[in-house]
Amino acid sequence: MLVTGASGLLGNRLVELALQRGHDVISCYKDHAPLLGKPLALDLIHDTEVRKAFSETHPDAVVNTAAMTDVDRCELEPEAAFAANGISVSNLARAAKETNSFIIQVSTDYVFDGEKGNYSEYDETRPINKYGESKLEGERAVMNELDEKTWSIARSSVVYGWGRASRPNAATFVYEKLSRREGIRMVRDQFSSPTFNTSLGTMLIEIAERKLPGILHTSGATRLSRFDFAVGLAKTFELDATLIKAVQARDLHWKAKRPADSSLNVGRAQKLLRESPLNIGSAYEALRREHVDED
Ligand SMILES: NC(=O)c1ccc[n+]([C@@H]2O[C@H](COP(=O)([O-])OP(=O)(O)OC[C@H]3O[C@@H](n4cnc5c(N)ncnc54)[C@H](OP(=O)(O)O)[C@@H]3O)[C@@H](O)[C@H]2O)c1
Image (cartoon, rainbow, N blue to C red; front, top):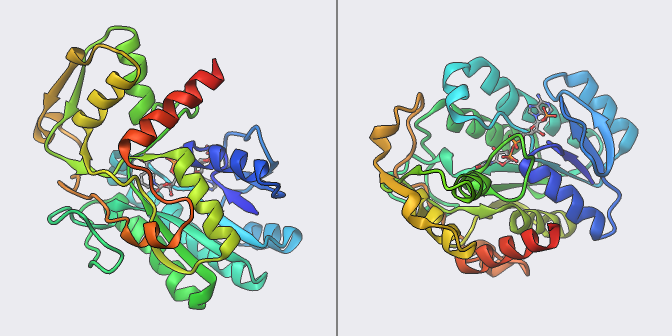
């Protein structure tokens, strides 16, 4: 299995889980060498390097978790966003075709405009920011380059977990701030389907092992605002939820617009997968267990 973005929040956990399942894992990265798997420095923007890596390793399955994920940075640097999230995926898809590798492209709820919420795989995409547009270009690259039985697009939403200390995510931000008794402001009028990285990693491995084709919504199963997510997390870890102040999205002056409700309908994944999306209560509990294990 070849995992790109192996140094990232999702990729790092995915590699760990794949190794536990006995897979031979090539861990690709750009700037930060991953701790697990066989490390391979590979900037996905360079077509010839990607093809060389594939012809030398002949992966059975590829999971592309690499991306430029900073939504505001994508808005300010659209060329870099389209290179990382669009052109790089074309490069991967062409290389995967040459080696007959099954490819999973990890994508996002931000391909939707957020007007409706509870989006299924059959709903129309209409991104409202550069991150979403560039990720949609990545989805199209996979669909256009490859035969339909050889790819999967796994869309997710607000990924969290015990990731790299230097790069906070929705869970570590809340946990660390509240542990230090610092107040935080969280948005109450924007909804998504927060996704525990371990759960997503497990679903992606199942898709890779069974080579399940098509689009699949592999997020958490519960629609939540960031505020509600933070309050639930505070309760799980017995932290002081009164330190969390509810704000409106318009108070935060983001560079990029955010969809108001990009929550995903996970019905298809629940039917297809043995390891199906977690509801938020089970996800908090699993997050707490992983924390205890790390201590
Ligand atoms: N985080 C979320 O809330 C969220 C929500 C929905 C969907 N997703 C999707 O889930 C996936 C994983 O997200 P994440 O949060 O785990 O990402 P992340 O922590 O930001 O990590 C991104 C990874 O991409 C790698 N990368 C970036 N540009 C690259 C390039 N040109 N060539 C090779 N590698 C490159 C980085 O490598 P280096 O560190 O070595 O530079 C890093 O390993 C992405 O596809 C993202 O769009 C994320």
